[in-house]
Image (cartoon, rainbow, N blue to C red; front, side, top):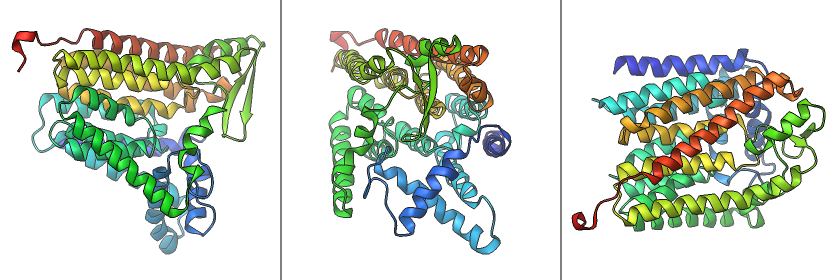
Length: 403
């Protein structure tokens, strides 16, 4: 136990420190985007998601405000430069510590210890992007919610739904729970009630058309260079037949080439179709008597991977989404989680090599950097195939054994 907690603390401190020394500003979003949004809201200016359309779900503003609150004493007492960064890392560390405590408890099983070591390894390999993005707030919520689904389905679903109102991906775990858990009615009702409560609160605060802005803002965007679907176009850029441009509207680099718009337009419908198809496979397995422990992990991971693979965006922080479902897989079915563990750890390492370490070369469409990104994206497809394959092979109870 002591070794686990020491590793947890050391990994977080080292990863936080790497944000100060790695190139390409891996902490950039925190100080250049989150802090101004929080300052504007606290200073009586515009409030993203309320008075103006925002790219994130509205509850994402809450941790940004909390980080400002944690940073305020440092500014007032010491005048510390970069205090907001310290506040942000402190918030992530506290949330991760709570989730880590829920995971390991007082006398963790071998599976829970293995899951804890995996979490530490994934953070270290992925690097500072694992801490200095809004996605870092959703990981501990997803871990706690996933661990409590079987024993506290209402509380667990509430946490996962709140996570989805910070960054959409935890909604995939809610969907997997509705399919795989016998308490699916309670899960569904809780998710609906929490979402309704958020919407009502937003309406009372003055939001209207902005409520679903995080969805509408995504419809017209182009293809980000790190997206899986952008990989062939990046090779065209390496050959001089395509161009990498910066979008000041959404603050990201996108690929410009013939056919890009068509591919980008097709991705959202493709995502919806694939999610429905995988959910259908899971539903058939559930109806035929598959157990929660065997069905939920591959279903949850496959749905999360689909959200990454079919996305117009390929931001490096998306790899943090994979950590929670793999932790849950290790806890529920440790033996069959071994391959996903190895694949996700490799994905974390390759992602760090892409950003922040090799990002300058990638923006120049350097062949080596494009090759590393291609390996990362190909491994995402491998993980997707692995998830679907495992899901299809989930055993079901024969009719005679059902209650």
